[in-house]
Figure 1 (cartoon, rainbow, N blue to C red):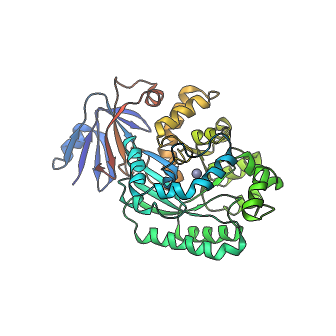
Figure 2: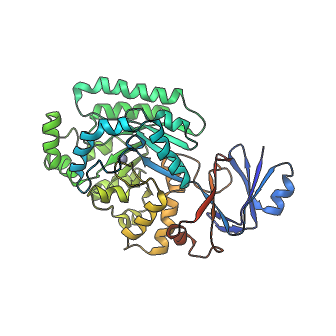
Length: 405
Ligand SMILES: [Zn+2]
């Protein structure tokens, strides 16, 4: 059945509309037009009215999250990347065991409550598959490949392919199996090539972590720094499996969402830009792990595609994009306030959708009807983007693929 949604205001790329309605059919926005016209032409549709100062806004998209580590509150060590990594290894089994279906579902439902209607889940072992499939949201399910030792390559690749196959077998509407390459330091080049071949052949979305820490920079450039001890102790490995540029060149022709990219060089930024890749910026995670901050003014000035994401609860205290936007707004204080506020909103809607290859993130005809009804306190002004970020307005309704959830 068709639905006509009539809020007081609609947030669209061509400005905030009043006296308009959205017609939804089969999960898609079929029409946005004057409400008198939409009502007249669709007499048999279900009509949903919302009160004065209600604003229809695109559902938020959290493109980079690790659901598996949702049990962490205070177990992991913050402030320094390598100390954090050791604490992850030390607590990994416990954290995974503690995070059963209900723990993961709580994290996912929390995201929905805060307006996240789509998320990209990085899955290292597939134990989050059920929670993601059962969720009401759209999910890009990134089966992650990790392993730097050539001797283990076959076993690791088979395990990866098995998880990918399982996620494909069980997919539902709004659930998209995808591929994650853990990082340049942790995945053997042969494995990367094989996985990217699969992604290319099957048209799957791809993501990877890249240049998150100083340790990663020093290890890849000089086989030195904190990672040198880490790899020597844990894997008896003395040098990196590839340089950063060797790693990046493998992603030619495969549009990829690179997470963090805090410590990238000019050459690497230029490569990402030239090849149409996108950057996932996780400001809270970067701060908590002592990784500094992305030069967002530079990335944005280069006209690169970027988006904001929360990362997992292993390096964040919430999975909340409003909080993430607020932190980013204050962290990047060198950028003009109102312009940045608008860009942050775009980053968690239309930009995130583009990076994940989805037709979402904007209220426009032909796009998926993933929408929030936000109750403003006053009629919107020119400064609406800023106030959306500053004030935690109530979300009174959530639509996913045209259904109220
Ligand atoms: Zn991550």
